Length: 118
Image (cartoon, rainbow, N blue to C red):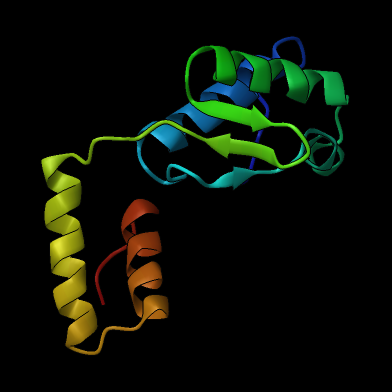
């Protein structure tokens, strides 16, 4: 996950919103392990207390669960949207027809960057 902070004063809220968005969208699925507090703090170059505060809020709101000596895990089960279900069905068909993961990711990157089709 790539964080780009907007404000120095509310870093924990930005971390919270970042994870909340990806968890709700199903990008980070249920039972996925999140980085340890210290690991994420080190990667982001911030105080571990800031990450802990974000994780505390996520846990309070039912997105994650901290299991002592095991880590932090997503417990939120997202409900797939009809668009996501349809996309996965199409992607499965394209995969069966020989579309590679790299080609699919490349196509997605182009679309989301506003690029043109080949």
